[in-house]
Image (cartoon, rainbow, N blue to C red; front, side, top):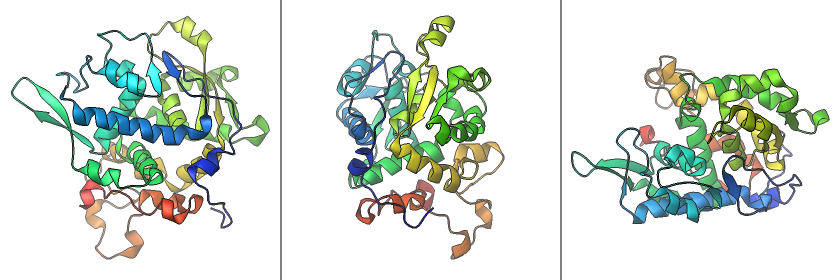
Length: 317
C-alpha cells in the first residue's frame, strides 16, 4: 500500500462518489438514493435488526433455524432496504437484507439459539453485543466485514457445496479494475463469465451493501428464467470506496488464507485466520507467526481514532 494514501472518514470518503444510485434488484427497494451514506446505513440497519431481536421473543424454524415468518414483515418495515410483495408465508431467505444480517449476527456470535423446551427454540442477543456497541462506526463496519470475509461459509449464500464464488471473484475484480472500461464490468456483454457466476444470486448485493460496487439488475435474464426471489446482475461498477478497499482486501486479506470454513473444508482442524501454519504449530510469543488483526491492513485508509479496536475472536478469548 502506498505510504501517501489519503486518510479518510466514511463521510469524506463517500462525498467523492459520483456513481449513479444503485439498483437494488429483485423485489427490493432502496428508500434513500444518497449513496454517500451506504456503509453507515448498513450499520444503522444492522443495529435496528439487533434491537428488534433484543426486544422480541423470536421463535426460529425447526428445519433451518431461521427467524419465523411472522416476525419478518415487522423487521422488514424498519430497514432502509425493503423486500416487496412479501406474504405471511414468505421465508427468511426471500428477505435477502434480513437474511444477510442474520448470517452476520450468527457468524459474529452476537445472537445465539436457545431451547425453551423440547419443541421450541428462540434466538437471543449475547453479551458480546455490549462489546459491539462500544465500537466506533468504522470499527463496527470492519467487524461486519471481518465476519463476512473470515467466518461465513460463502457456499451457503448460493446453495452450493463448494466455494464457487471465491474461485471466480479474483477474475471479476480484475476486470472491474480496468480503468479503460471505467471500472465497470458489463456482464451482459460477457456471456461466458455471466454463466460462470450464474449462481451468485444476492451475493452481488452483499458487496453492494458493503459499499464496494453498484450492481444493475439484468431484467431480461430475470424474465427468461422466471426465478422468483433470485437476482441476476447485468453490470457491476466499482464505487470510490470500492476502488480503495478492494485492492487491500484482495491483496492483504487473501480469502484462501483468511476464510475459516474454506480452510476447514481443506482439512485443517484449527485454522488461524491469516496464518498458513496449522494452529498446533503456532508458538506462543513468536512475533513472526502472530496473526494480524483483520482491520490492520486498512488502518492507513482511515483516521487513527476511528479504527483502533476490534472484538476479540472467540478462539482467542
